[in-house]
Amino acid sequence: MPRYLVEAYVPRLRAGGGRAAGREARAAAEELAREGTPVRYVRTTFLPDDETCFHVFEAASEEAVGEVCRRAGIGSGRIVPAVE
View 1 (cartoon, helix red, strand yellow):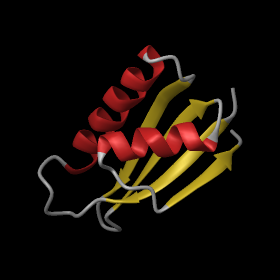
View 2 (cartoon, rainbow, N blue to C red):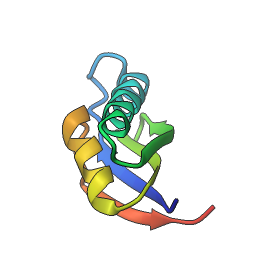
View 3 (cartoon, one colour):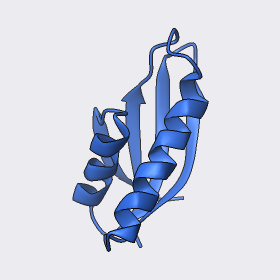
C-alpha cells in the first residue's frame, strides 16, 4: 500500500501533545480499517517547538487518510504521498 504523510498543527498547550495525537490517529485508522477501508497507522513524530505533528499512514488512497484525520480531529493541513 502507498504511504502518506500528514502534517498537522498541534498546539503546545494541548495536554499530551504529540502522544495524544498519535493515539487518536491510531484509533481512527483502526476504526476505519475495521469498517473495510484499507488504512494503517505507522507512526507520529511531534516537533513541540514547531507545534507540528507528522503522521505516517499506509492507505489505499489519500481520501482514506483524510477520513482518518477527520475522525481523529487532528486536522489535515497537508496530506502528501511519502517514500521511505
